[in-house]
Image (cartoon, rainbow, N blue to C red; front, top):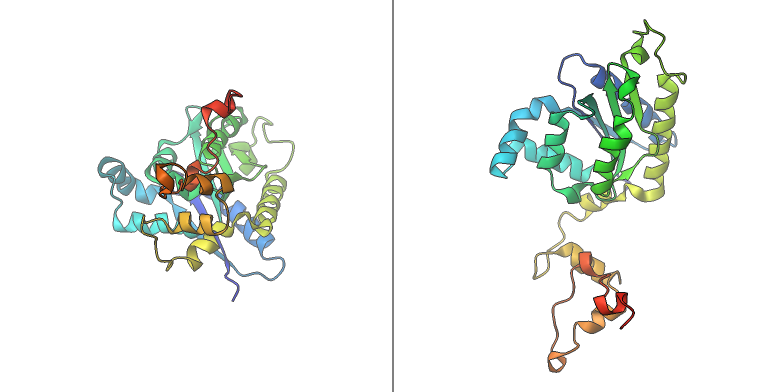
Length: 257
């Protein structure tokens, strides 16, 4: 049975209503339409991060998420794609948005398609996506949609000074949504489906089912597997974690190996 595509939209607007939520809704509608063009079922969930402000602060202080924050974290884990939109404050994402990212395990974002959006009063803040927000998700190893969408007040009709973008907001939203759909169809969002299907996978003795799966699929290089029994009179040594499976000895890097 084919699982529906799970699309999660995260909006970090601080007011109700907010231009951040307006942009989020536009991106969500277009992305759902682009993902469903071939008849695929798309499940859309939109989350207002402002409703989790206290939970996020408590999680940072105690390192334990509340029950409702844990449910949101699971939504991120199981999502096939994420739309993340934040207002820009002081040349960067809002503190609420950054707190949300800080409260989550960085591995949740690895390989997950993420469409970025941002809002601000004027287009002068548009570069914040590229020098503050995109690098953050690059560090988290997310698969970032090439087109990020920035919207100023002028893009929503408040164009009193002729500051609206030359390309209409709707056109930029459609392009970004199309790119997100292409990435998901290419299998970059498969991590969410794998997480759902493998939820009942029994962990290995070291508590890492993922590491066992990686070794079973041959992801660990042959020389790493061979080194597990080298030395100590042939006694087996623990296999390297997947994170260090491509380890190169310093001697080899210096050309002495």
